[in-house]
Structure formats: C-alpha cells, structure tokens
Image 1: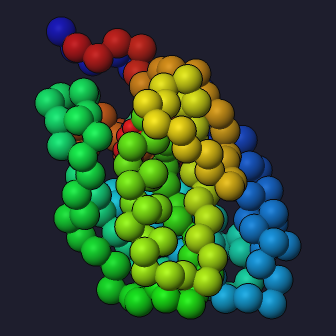
Image 2 (image 1 turned 135 degrees about the horizontal axis):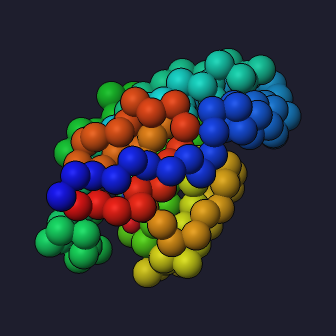
Length: 176
Ligand code: IMP
Ligand code: MG
C-alpha cells in the first residue's frame, strides 16, 4: 500500500514564531552566560539550527547520539550512547536540545549520564512533547509544542529516516 500523504499539524510559519519565542526566553534566562548546546542526533539538528540563530547569548554546540534497545517501537528502556560529546561539560551551562519527548526514557537516561559529568547547570529544550506517552516521569524546561499521541514527521523528525526535510510538522495518518 502506498504511504498516505502527511497532513500538516504545524506549518512552517507557526514553527518559526514558536522557535523565536523559545530563543527569546532562553536568551533572557541565560543573560551574561555562555551556553553549550547539546543536540541529540539525528532528529534535533534542524530545530537546533533555528533555535541558536535566535539566541542573544553566545553559545557553543556539540552533539550526542543515543540508541534505545528494544524491538520495533517497543523500547526496553535501555539507552546506549553511540556517539558521545567531544566537549567536556564540567562547569558549563548545558542546554540539551531534543526533537520530541515520547516515553521519556531517552532523555531521562541521557540527563542522568550528563549530570554525572558535573555541568554548572543542565536544562532541556524539546521541540515537541507527547506527555500522554510517558513511561518514566520527565519534564523539559522548555517545550515548543505539546502534542497528542500521534506520529509526527518533518522539521527534522523522521519515519524510518524519511520525511526529515519537510519544512512543516506533519502527522502520518497512515503508515503502510
Ligand atoms: P523516548 O522519549 O525515549 O520514547 O524517545 C524519543 C525519541 O523517539 C525521539 O527522539 C524520536 O527519535 C522518537 N520519536 C518518538 N515519537 C516520535 C514521532 O512522533 N515522530 C518521530 N520520532 C518520534
Ligand atoms: Mg531522536
């Protein structure tokens, strides 16, 4: 069966406005400091690129990649770092940037690992948040949009590595 055409949930212009608001909020929270922005690959790269261009505070960037064990879409909760940061984070103000929080397993584990490295501060900014899907409690410090339990793609988010390039966030109505 052919894949259904994704339906737009957040158009480009709405995303741009919200990302600008997040950048302003973050800039005012970190006045006089320098941020180390940690992007979680691959999904966060487009959001992160737009977010940092809206910042008024200086920042450096680095990336981390995590894989969760499990079968298909069912995660066992085990998270493994497959590409670590290249920057030491001890004593730095770290902002972790993620595309979407679903069960919360990835971020709760990553934050635990990063905290062990003693950053001066550590906060999380997620573009999207599916709060209904949590398996472990996790709250981000900054959230672009809370969304219902639907599978979304575009603006960096993928389905089997497809659709990341779409400028809008779309719902996959039917994955066939
Ligand atoms: P979790 O919070 O550990 O369950 O996992 C979050 C990760 O699952 C995200 O970084 C995405 O890679 C992926 N994910 C969860 N929901 C979606 C979705 O609706 N679209 C695309 N990726 C998703
Ligand atoms: Mg991801």
